[in-house]
Image (cartoon, rainbow, N blue to C red; front, side, top):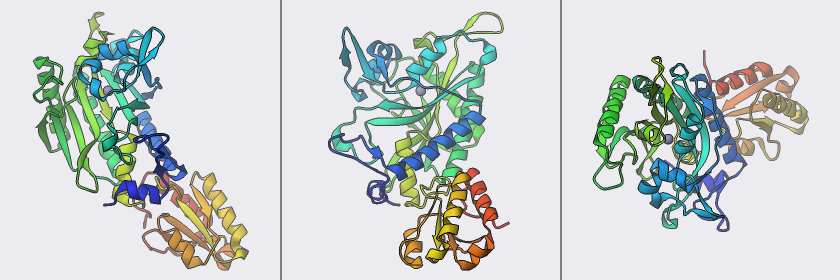
Length: 404
Ligand SMILES: [Zn+2]
């Protein structure tokens, strides 16, 4: 595995500046293009799975976090409040309270449930500067988050579907979890004291893991302050484990915010909140992708997907036309025409598709494709070659070519 901090800078994906501050990386164009592709993928799978997307602000009043319990249980990880006249606002430590308020602001019938609210949104953590570095310990986080408001009877199905989305995303990303963890509370006052809540939620999560057929290990002291969770664990280049994806069944926030819906009996009922994140924070996900793939990202994530290499200057117009056609199909494509052909192929070694255009190809309207793994394909009509690349990229495939 690679160290994402070193490779991320070598590949010009992200960097930091002492004047912006540590733990506050910025994304350069190639890194931003990976992040955009990832965010588009997530929004697309969420849309297909029945989620609706929202936006909410990264600030909230101190009282909001007193109500959510963050102030009492999570204060040390939060930025200090900012004084604004007579009130205090804080950078949010999670998206849950905003989403709970958005649910609460309108009346809901049981017919609307499960109501799946998703957002890729900013949140903040006051990490100490000593532990910051790269994209894994950051103070500003973009979280792929969602909250499903549902009846108690729907919670297991919703949580299990979320595990399915996580498994499908890992296939598309070409990554694998090291293990699934059932994170339970440990000793100490960090956790909400309500034994019945912990028992109910833990029992449901065990049911989810069993139904999904995933082996897991239970571990004390890793739960959220308000409830247990399923954590999907990954390991970095140094073998250090961290959590990428999570699924939680939460009875605590709905009661703190006094959430309710109208049941079939016309009465007031308390929904359950399923919190779930498919890829966790965008920063950590990209750090992991860099470490696993060493810059040779699955084609759908690659900053440059297709490079067109004219053999001589005479083929430059034909090469430009191929790259332009590729861009029209949604591909990130450009032409490399400076230097010897072998040097240009070497420079493009991380680009999944390399199209060589010589006199013969230019005259016949064909492309000789070379794949990043050094496979070369027989010449294909340019339109067919581009169409097949666009289809593979659009299907989020990790293999570079379909031999059939
Ligand atoms: Zn949440």
